[in-house]
Image (tube, rainbow, N blue to C red; front, side, top):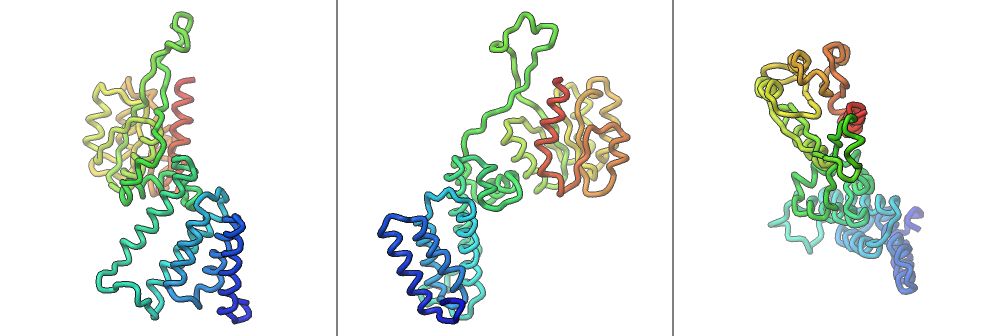
Length: 303
Protein backbone atom coordinates (compact mmCIF):
# COMPACT_ATOMS: atom_id res chain seq x y z
CA UNK A 1 0.00 0.00 0.00
CA UNK A 2 2.88 2.37 0.78
CA UNK A 3 4.40 1.81 -2.63
CA UNK A 4 0.98 2.19 -4.29
CA UNK A 5 0.82 5.70 -2.83
CA UNK A 6 -1.74 4.88 -0.17
CA UNK A 7 0.28 5.78 2.96
CA UNK A 8 -2.74 6.16 5.26
CA UNK A 9 -3.92 2.63 4.57
CA UNK A 10 -0.38 1.30 4.80
CA UNK A 11 0.08 2.96 8.20
CA UNK A 12 -3.20 1.49 9.48
CA UNK A 13 -2.32 -2.04 8.26
CA UNK A 14 1.18 -1.98 9.76
CA UNK A 15 -0.08 -0.56 13.04
CA UNK A 16 -2.72 -3.28 13.24
CA UNK A 17 -0.19 -5.98 12.33
CA UNK A 18 2.13 -4.79 15.09
CA UNK A 19 -0.66 -4.78 17.66
CA UNK A 20 -1.88 -8.27 16.71
CA UNK A 21 1.65 -9.71 16.85
CA UNK A 22 2.31 -8.11 20.22
CA UNK A 23 -1.00 -9.41 21.57
CA UNK A 24 0.01 -12.91 20.46
CA UNK A 25 3.34 -12.58 22.27
CA UNK A 26 5.38 -12.39 19.05
CA UNK A 27 7.40 -9.30 19.95
CA UNK A 28 9.96 -9.86 17.18
CA UNK A 29 7.31 -9.62 14.45
CA UNK A 30 5.59 -6.72 16.20
CA UNK A 31 8.88 -4.80 16.29
CA UNK A 32 9.63 -5.56 12.66
CA UNK A 33 6.20 -4.20 11.66
CA UNK A 34 7.14 -0.95 13.38
CA UNK A 35 10.46 -0.93 11.51
CA UNK A 36 8.69 -1.41 8.16
CA UNK A 37 6.50 1.59 9.01
CA UNK A 38 9.61 3.76 9.33
CA UNK A 39 11.34 2.24 6.29
CA UNK A 40 8.35 2.57 3.94
CA UNK A 41 6.62 5.70 5.25
CA UNK A 42 9.53 7.91 6.32
CA UNK A 43 8.59 10.63 3.83
CA UNK A 44 4.88 10.50 4.63
CA UNK A 45 4.67 10.42 8.44
CA UNK A 46 5.24 13.32 10.79
CA UNK A 47 8.42 13.42 12.83
CA UNK A 48 6.43 12.63 15.94
CA UNK A 49 4.87 9.49 14.43
CA UNK A 50 8.28 8.33 13.18
CA UNK A 51 9.75 8.80 16.64
CA UNK A 52 6.90 6.83 18.21
CA UNK A 53 7.43 4.01 15.69
CA UNK A 54 11.18 3.81 16.39
CA UNK A 55 10.66 3.91 20.15
CA UNK A 56 8.06 1.14 19.85
CA UNK A 57 10.39 -0.98 17.69
CA UNK A 58 13.23 -0.40 20.13
CA UNK A 59 11.10 -1.58 23.06
CA UNK A 60 9.70 -4.63 21.27
CA UNK A 61 13.13 -5.69 19.93
CA UNK A 62 15.04 -5.11 23.17
CA UNK A 63 15.86 -8.83 23.51
CA UNK A 64 16.51 -9.69 19.86
CA UNK A 65 19.81 -11.37 18.99
CA UNK A 66 19.41 -10.99 15.23
CA UNK A 67 22.21 -8.75 13.92
CA UNK A 68 20.35 -7.77 10.73
CA UNK A 69 17.34 -6.64 12.77
CA UNK A 70 19.55 -4.59 15.09
CA UNK A 71 21.16 -2.93 12.09
CA UNK A 72 17.73 -2.10 10.67
CA UNK A 73 16.79 -0.59 14.03
CA UNK A 74 19.94 1.52 14.02
CA UNK A 75 19.29 2.67 10.44
CA UNK A 76 15.70 3.62 11.26
CA UNK A 77 16.79 5.62 14.30
CA UNK A 78 19.33 7.51 12.18
CA UNK A 79 16.64 8.16 9.57
CA UNK A 80 14.34 9.65 12.23
CA UNK A 81 17.14 11.88 13.49
CA UNK A 82 17.79 13.05 9.95
CA UNK A 83 14.12 13.82 9.45
CA UNK A 84 14.08 16.05 12.53
CA UNK A 85 16.90 18.05 11.01
CA UNK A 86 15.70 18.13 7.39
CA UNK A 87 11.90 18.28 7.36
CA UNK A 88 10.40 21.77 7.06
CA UNK A 89 7.20 20.69 8.83
CA UNK A 90 8.31 20.72 12.45
CA UNK A 91 6.23 18.93 15.11
CA UNK A 92 4.59 21.28 17.62
CA UNK A 93 5.52 18.99 20.52
CA UNK A 94 9.23 19.89 20.28
CA UNK A 95 10.47 22.93 22.19
CA UNK A 96 12.68 24.42 19.49
CA UNK A 97 13.69 27.30 21.75
CA UNK A 98 15.98 24.99 23.72
CA UNK A 99 16.49 22.31 21.08
CA UNK A 100 20.02 21.26 20.11
CA UNK A 101 20.63 18.50 17.58
CA UNK A 102 24.00 17.35 18.97
CA UNK A 103 22.79 16.21 22.42
CA UNK A 104 19.81 14.48 20.78
CA UNK A 105 22.15 12.58 18.45
CA UNK A 106 24.42 11.69 21.38
CA UNK A 107 21.42 10.48 23.37
CA UNK A 108 20.38 8.11 20.59
CA UNK A 109 23.99 7.03 20.07
CA UNK A 110 24.37 6.23 23.77
CA UNK A 111 21.12 4.27 23.75
CA UNK A 112 22.22 1.98 20.91
CA UNK A 113 25.75 1.55 22.28
CA UNK A 114 24.30 0.53 25.65
CA UNK A 115 21.96 -1.92 23.91
CA UNK A 116 24.81 -3.38 21.84
CA UNK A 117 27.03 -3.82 24.91
CA UNK A 118 24.16 -5.52 26.73
CA UNK A 119 23.45 -7.92 23.86
CA UNK A 120 27.15 -8.73 23.43
CA UNK A 121 27.66 -9.46 27.11
CA UNK A 122 29.77 -6.34 27.57
CA UNK A 123 32.35 -7.39 24.97
CA UNK A 124 33.51 -4.45 22.90
CA UNK A 125 34.39 -6.25 19.66
CA UNK A 126 30.99 -7.98 19.17
CA UNK A 127 29.25 -4.75 20.22
CA UNK A 128 31.17 -2.83 17.55
CA UNK A 129 30.07 -5.42 14.97
CA UNK A 130 26.42 -5.03 16.02
CA UNK A 131 26.74 -1.27 15.58
CA UNK A 132 28.31 -1.62 12.14
CA UNK A 133 31.61 -0.06 13.24
CA UNK A 134 34.89 -0.95 11.56
CA UNK A 135 36.55 -2.32 14.70
CA UNK A 136 36.59 -2.42 18.48
CA UNK A 137 39.07 0.48 18.62
CA UNK A 138 36.45 2.74 17.02
CA UNK A 139 33.87 1.89 19.69
CA UNK A 140 36.52 2.22 22.40
CA UNK A 141 37.39 5.70 21.19
CA UNK A 142 33.70 6.73 21.12
CA UNK A 143 33.17 5.42 24.64
CA UNK A 144 36.24 7.14 26.03
CA UNK A 145 35.56 10.50 24.40
CA UNK A 146 31.75 10.76 24.18
CA UNK A 147 30.15 8.27 26.55
CA UNK A 148 32.44 7.67 29.54
CA UNK A 149 29.41 6.75 31.63
CA UNK A 150 29.05 3.60 29.50
CA UNK A 151 32.60 2.35 30.14
CA UNK A 152 31.28 0.46 33.16
CA UNK A 153 29.01 -1.56 30.84
CA UNK A 154 32.05 -3.35 29.40
CA UNK A 155 33.15 -6.68 30.83
CA UNK A 156 36.23 -6.42 33.10
CA UNK A 157 39.48 -6.59 31.15
CA UNK A 158 41.46 -9.77 31.68
CA UNK A 159 45.17 -8.90 31.25
CA UNK A 160 47.14 -11.08 28.88
CA UNK A 161 50.28 -12.38 30.49
CA UNK A 162 53.65 -13.33 29.12
CA UNK A 163 55.75 -16.09 30.63
CA UNK A 164 59.16 -15.07 32.03
CA UNK A 165 60.30 -18.62 32.71
CA UNK A 166 63.36 -19.40 30.60
CA UNK A 167 63.94 -22.77 28.97
CA UNK A 168 66.84 -23.47 31.33
CA UNK A 169 64.48 -23.45 34.32
CA UNK A 170 61.59 -25.34 32.72
CA UNK A 171 62.51 -28.58 34.51
CA UNK A 172 62.38 -26.88 37.93
CA UNK A 173 59.29 -24.70 37.67
CA UNK A 174 55.81 -26.09 37.07
CA UNK A 175 53.38 -24.39 34.69
CA UNK A 176 51.08 -23.38 37.55
CA UNK A 177 53.91 -21.63 39.38
CA UNK A 178 55.39 -19.86 36.35
CA UNK A 179 56.19 -16.20 36.92
CA UNK A 180 54.29 -13.77 34.68
CA UNK A 181 54.22 -10.05 34.07
CA UNK A 182 52.23 -7.63 31.98
CA UNK A 183 53.38 -6.72 28.48
CA UNK A 184 54.88 -3.21 28.37
CA UNK A 185 54.86 -1.19 25.13
CA UNK A 186 56.44 2.18 24.31
CA UNK A 187 54.19 4.08 21.92
CA UNK A 188 55.51 7.22 20.23
CA UNK A 189 52.83 9.31 18.48
CA UNK A 190 52.33 13.10 18.28
CA UNK A 191 48.72 13.02 17.03
CA UNK A 192 46.54 13.06 20.18
CA UNK A 193 43.52 11.44 18.51
CA UNK A 194 45.51 8.55 17.03
CA UNK A 195 47.49 8.15 20.27
CA UNK A 196 44.29 7.99 22.31
CA UNK A 197 42.65 5.49 19.97
CA UNK A 198 45.64 3.14 19.97
CA UNK A 199 46.18 3.47 23.73
CA UNK A 200 42.55 2.52 24.40
CA UNK A 201 42.82 -0.41 22.00
CA UNK A 202 46.04 -1.82 23.45
CA UNK A 203 45.01 -1.31 27.07
CA UNK A 204 41.83 -3.26 26.35
CA UNK A 205 44.16 -6.21 25.67
CA UNK A 206 45.60 -5.87 29.17
CA UNK A 207 48.89 -4.38 27.97
CA UNK A 208 50.66 -1.52 29.73
CA UNK A 209 51.24 1.45 27.41
CA UNK A 210 53.87 4.14 27.98
CA UNK A 211 53.30 7.05 25.59
CA UNK A 212 55.31 10.06 24.45
CA UNK A 213 54.80 12.59 21.67
CA UNK A 214 58.23 13.54 20.25
CA UNK A 215 61.40 11.90 19.04
CA UNK A 216 63.81 13.33 21.60
CA UNK A 217 61.71 12.24 24.56
CA UNK A 218 61.32 8.81 22.96
CA UNK A 219 65.10 8.54 22.53
CA UNK A 220 65.63 9.19 26.24
CA UNK A 221 63.31 6.32 27.10
CA UNK A 222 64.77 3.98 24.48
CA UNK A 223 68.34 4.58 25.68
CA UNK A 224 67.31 4.14 29.33
CA UNK A 225 67.33 0.84 31.19
CA UNK A 226 63.52 0.72 31.21
CA UNK A 227 62.11 -2.59 29.99
CA UNK A 228 59.89 -2.60 26.89
CA UNK A 229 58.50 -5.70 25.22
CA UNK A 230 57.79 -3.78 22.01
CA UNK A 231 58.35 -0.34 20.44
CA UNK A 232 55.49 1.18 18.44
CA UNK A 233 56.82 4.22 16.55
CA UNK A 234 55.17 6.81 14.38
CA UNK A 235 57.31 7.84 11.39
CA UNK A 236 56.61 11.58 11.26
CA UNK A 237 57.55 12.99 14.67
CA UNK A 238 58.86 16.28 16.09
CA UNK A 239 62.62 15.95 16.60
CA UNK A 240 63.83 12.52 15.52
CA UNK A 241 61.58 10.61 13.13
CA UNK A 242 60.59 6.97 13.46
CA UNK A 243 63.41 5.60 11.31
CA UNK A 244 66.04 7.56 13.25
CA UNK A 245 64.62 6.19 16.51
CA UNK A 246 64.63 2.69 15.04
CA UNK A 247 68.28 3.00 13.99
CA UNK A 248 69.27 4.31 17.44
CA UNK A 249 67.41 1.44 19.09
CA UNK A 250 69.07 -1.22 16.93
CA UNK A 251 72.48 0.20 17.86
CA UNK A 252 71.81 -0.58 21.54
CA UNK A 253 72.58 -4.08 22.80
CA UNK A 254 69.49 -4.24 25.04
CA UNK A 255 67.16 -3.12 22.21
CA UNK A 256 68.47 -5.24 19.34
CA UNK A 257 65.96 -8.04 19.88
CA UNK A 258 62.99 -5.88 20.89
CA UNK A 259 60.24 -6.04 18.21
CA UNK A 260 59.62 -2.68 16.52
CA UNK A 261 56.57 -1.58 14.53
CA UNK A 262 56.61 1.66 12.54
CA UNK A 263 53.39 3.41 11.47
CA UNK A 264 53.23 6.00 8.73
CA UNK A 265 50.77 7.68 6.42
CA UNK A 266 53.42 7.83 3.69
CA UNK A 267 55.00 5.07 1.57
CA UNK A 268 58.23 4.46 3.50
CA UNK A 269 57.88 0.72 4.03
CA UNK A 270 61.07 -0.29 2.22
CA UNK A 271 63.17 2.26 4.11
CA UNK A 272 61.61 1.22 7.42
CA UNK A 273 62.21 -2.50 6.88
CA UNK A 274 65.79 -1.90 5.75
CA UNK A 275 66.41 0.01 8.98
CA UNK A 276 65.46 -3.07 10.99
CA UNK A 277 61.74 -2.82 11.73
CA UNK A 278 59.80 -6.02 12.32
CA UNK A 279 56.58 -4.65 10.80
CA UNK A 280 55.21 -1.62 8.96
CA UNK A 281 51.59 -0.43 9.18
CA UNK A 282 49.90 2.31 7.16
CA UNK A 283 47.92 4.99 8.97
CA UNK A 284 45.00 4.89 9.17
CA UNK A 285 44.25 1.89 6.95
CA UNK A 286 46.14 -0.72 9.00
CA UNK A 287 45.45 0.51 12.54
CA UNK A 288 42.79 -2.18 12.90
CA UNK A 289 45.61 -4.75 12.50
CA UNK A 290 47.84 -3.36 15.25
CA UNK A 291 46.69 -5.80 17.97
CA UNK A 292 47.08 -8.81 15.68
CA UNK A 293 50.53 -7.63 14.56
CA UNK A 294 51.73 -7.05 18.12
CA UNK A 295 50.39 -10.42 19.28
CA UNK A 296 52.17 -12.14 16.39
CA UNK A 297 55.50 -10.40 17.09
CA UNK A 298 55.37 -11.06 20.83
CA UNK A 299 54.46 -14.67 20.21
CA UNK A 300 57.39 -15.01 17.81
CA UNK A 301 59.72 -13.37 20.35
CA UNK A 302 58.66 -15.86 23.03
CA UNK A 303 59.15 -18.81 20.66
